[in-house]
Length: 220
Image 1 (cartoon, rainbow, N blue to C red):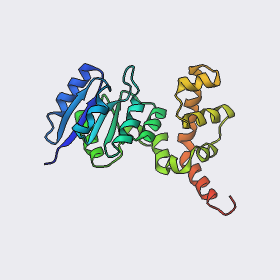
Image 2: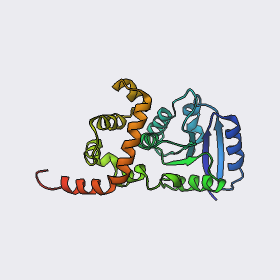
Image 3: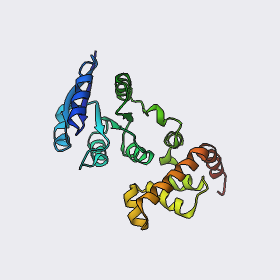
Image 4: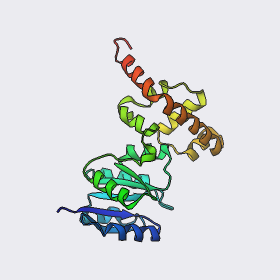
């Protein structure tokens, strides 16, 4: 049996040791290293040769997103799974665009954890059940990279401010950065994002399909 070589990156010691202990009991998963920070990951990963990297999405005082980008640039064949308690959809989109293949909630069952690892190792894209059918999965169905943010924005009726925020999200800005750029409070940004997600989740599938067909017509 070929074992899945896995690197775990989790800065909470209790969680790290607990996840490590659980996964080491699985006959087809080999935890080759468990890190509490990202300092040595890029230096040592060549020798570790992992199939999967299991990464805490919200590492304290460290940039998980930048680590994902660096890992995928240097080791494109490595599959990455992000862990979080309740990942927000804009974070999910940014991490997927950076190269993450799957997400798992930290309160998932052992069976869900191991199933996600095995599925991602085999090349599948995995989302927590609570996120399937959401804005994220709809965007991924049609391929945001193929459509581009402009078509996506045009396909849904939004206010001028909502369109500005969607464009900034598409550029990779977080809520705090958007608030600073637009000179509004982060709570106002979150409120707008909530409204945007509701609008797109309700209408995206139909409207994108209509817009995609229209844009293929001559002269459009």
